[in-house]
Length: 348
Ligand code: HEM
Image (cartoon, rainbow, N blue to C red; front, side):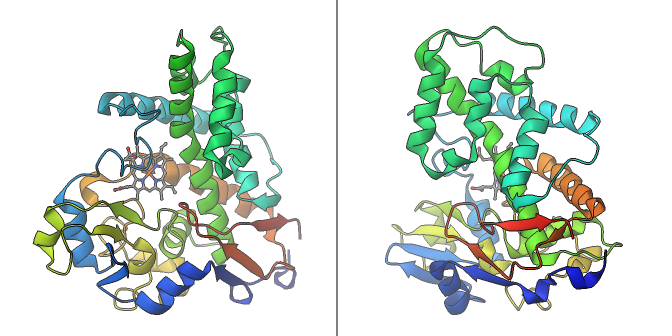
């Protein structure tokens, strides 16, 4: 493989959706600003820390286990779901990976399908279809597919069904099946969607990578420049005006890792993809770096994210695949999950 067959990161242009571009242009480096009359944006590390430490995320603020079909998801049920998917991920990581899988094509789609088949491949079709990427576009379509699956009688447990799948297949009534399938999607979707997005972002930002840089550093640096959870919302709450008088009692607070991760006061050459910076830095302790949320209640899935993302990057790095030299631009749309919409991986 020769370097002239590859697009170098500096030849690539990342095109942010206009509201994201405006955030960078108008508010980078700001401690607190007001994007809407009743919302404040917060990106100063000390203030971010105090806001997120002030109280835990409320039921409707939680990204994964917010209420489902009008029912709050009890903490114990959320924990059971997470234990099940954690078990399934560990089992998948232990299995021998298929030799030389074809990871070429459009990412994050390719990574999504690979993870879905690797982790959930043994589940009944009615559950696996819930991981279809097309469903991401419209929640209504997701519920239509769930309703169609739930209308079928409860299937017999097959060998190969994952632990998460087993939690979702025992329900006797239509309503319970609908709820169980919604819960399956809530738990499994982040594993496929967020990790494939994170890896696609790393490829776009930095490939080809220097051989000596560990994939772990690539992941941290990708999470810095394109944090999939680029904003963390907290609804108005009496704790916040007490922390800072610029926050009114009715203000919602939008914590913005997207901005704190690029703040020139916190990072050397913030716009550059420099995975080497993580040789010196501890990702758990860098002020203003919070891709997985605040230390008081960090993402419950991060211990799955890191090994799966590293595994995919290791596989791609040893496959010889490159980012299509013809691809010079990638868009970052305004969605809940920040990432480039498509990166094409090709054989050189
Ligand atoms: C790149 C991947 C991921 C990123 C960047 C990410 C980021 C985050 C962040 C920022 C929070 C804190 C939210 C807040 O304080 O409001 C969070 C919480 C959480 N995450 Fe993740 N996450 C990722 C993947 C996952 C995965 C794969 C799972 C599950 C399988 C997961 C499950 C959770 C859960 C259960 C919470 C606690 C709040 C809740 O119940 O929703 N995350 N995550």
